[in-house]
Length: 616
Image 1 (tube, helix red, strand yellow):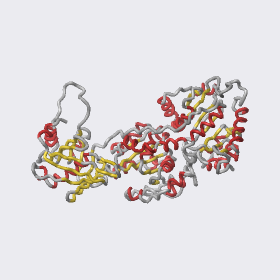
Image 2: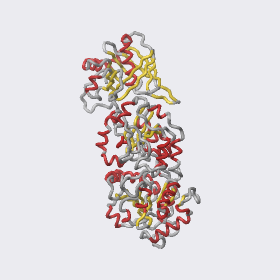
Image 3: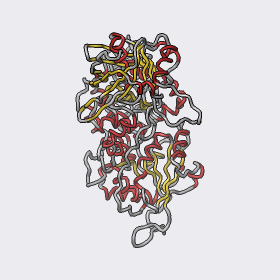
Image 4: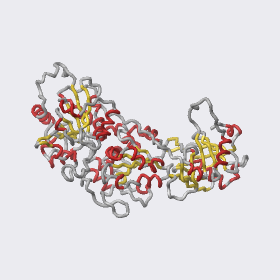
């Protein structure tokens, strides 16, 4: 069995070998097993250890998920003009087309599979052991394309064994197929050795490069939340792996249920979908299936990099048995809820007990899911998140990851050892994640609950699709559909935008637009124009134009602004209950509007003629 602690500083090597013994073993493999000589091939330059010719590293990707893991290790070769990088698509996967599209988007140089098989490469890097990799020539490094090896794929390889640790894919004719199997934790080497000592002889612990990217990006959390438009809202992230036991397969309506039941100004939703699931469904069909939640403002994170940035931005996670949850737990100790039912229903749509066919018992994800609260659809989400015990996620993550902050340095040392080349002197560091793409859709209609208590008004806005009882419907004119406009008690519009596309134009004044809307929609009680985050103009039916000034809230040293449309719902309720307040000289007082749990001071005053004449 391999050791659970390093035998020498640096890498932890399989079968109890020291780093020197491991290097000798690799040299032997290169001399006899991959068609290349370890020494004396005439390619090493003298003096400075540099090669006389360009070396070529082939990145062989079988799926988009595997490709994304390969892209995470590119900094290992950054700045080295001695190394050329090419990509090829390994045939045989149902999810290969998305990988090819991602390679093209990266503007990387590609070679067809047939050509790749005819060429001898100085190094081959893969992130999946599956497919006809034995046809490629050159020393091969295998990286994991997930975390924790917690899931088995039914119908492939050994039953109940994670494919990344399955000897069926790691041995050929009883011989290990890799020169280096890079793993993230000593327990993974131990698990592999229990299955196949021969395969474990090529294993070494280097850590997880994707986790290092997440950790180095933690200081960018505010920027990611700004890109998502989160504000002070609590960002709840849903994570779905792929396969029959995934969240989207078992509970496809969960995103829409949460989007309809959570107050829009207190919570934001984001969904992470495994690239294989996206490939199988197709982005178009996926967007159509998720339309109710997306229309309510849910963010659908991109499959590469953006999902990890959303994890950094998130405040809580609802997960199935996919390994994404381990990255969330390792990055920050925030609440996690389990939505995994083990592939079995308990009869009422809730979580079943016990592990299913895909989740491997005693794996890091099995440990995590057994310790965190299960999602209870009959209770408020905030109450369920409060049941999470701090430290639970971090404890489970420690069984999946080690060596944080040193991964690329360790990989560089191993890669360049296999290349028989001196590594660059400059240090290597993980690349921070780019900001996630913003939500594609902004909600344009809300079911609004309002509670007026003296000078304080509590506002909760929900998706217009909710079944919850509401005080009124608020809709954005010019964006919402006619059905919502006809039913809305409050209609508002936002100003802004650039110059007109044509030199000809016809624009409303505020007074003209308000009068037009109240005439066109008899069911509308109040019409309003949002001029800025701090200033709105509003008029109730049979009332006069009123100016609304909104002060920002203060929270933990931050200045927080809310959607002015939420404040307009409070004003709409006040003007309906106190119609006299809309009259000039009525002594309109300052009030407090509570939105998303934060108080915003609101000042109402009669609008000026200049206000009424503003164009929108």
